[in-house]
Image 1: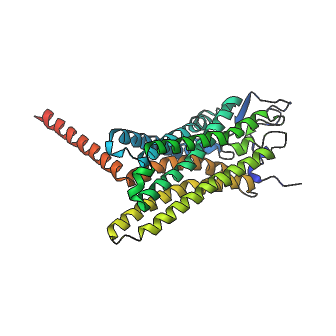
Image 2 (image 1 turned 90 degrees about the vertical axis):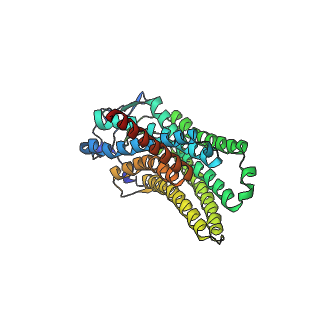
Image 3 (image 1 turned 180 degrees about the horizontal axis):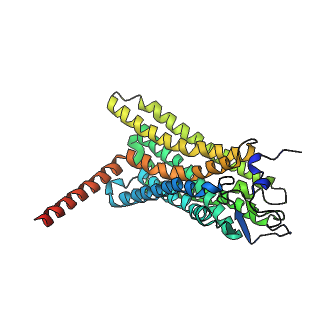
Length: 343
């Protein structure tokens, strides 16, 4: 008999006995029980502090990006549109899971409605797929801008940018839809307890008493064939960019382009590497502590939305200049007010 991974063995970690959970046959339970971070219940309040900090930075940073792009006419460019798409994705993704997480940490409110759980799972994973596709679009934009600068305006027209954005959104929504449909039809006749802070697909798919291999295999397909292909296309784009960087004879232009591309690559790696590590650890981690799996999964949802506005926003010259002008004028305005009132 195949050994169950340690990350998914939850019986001895549950604060609820099996007699307290719903052990009768039911197709769709009325509620699921989210345990939070099993084994670290006493530290839930302290763990919530860095998570809240990351979420606050993500909200402020991404809202700032949207505000600056809207107010700055020079930012009406394909890269700015993709940046806004990423900002919206980075607002929705952590918001879909953090409120429930905090209710577990602060108020011990562990129950979540069955439909709400599946809805949360759909939003989280669909926006994760979108988050994976947007760097591909941004990498393509950078490739055209650097390798074919004279054709950039003719290739990436506004209709083309709209089609790329729509394709990214539809891909995320359609590829995640089978998660929802399969999870809704499985019979849940053993337990309704989820050892996590949110309704992650890999955690929900272990609950049905039917054979869940279809859902598990489909999850691996999305992981490798979708995110893996995204990583390949991003790597291909930036490989061509790096080859073009060392052609210009002007050293300053070369260093400037290299600095921008390196920051983008750091942001992309900050998303893909933890996502792959978290998914593979959940599925194949035989000797990995459950609380470590859950922590990595939560960091994977909160870290990229926090880093993206910092990396992309600060490294985009127009965004940086607009922010500097905004704060500079604000400081002058406050200084003039102080002078007026002091007189």
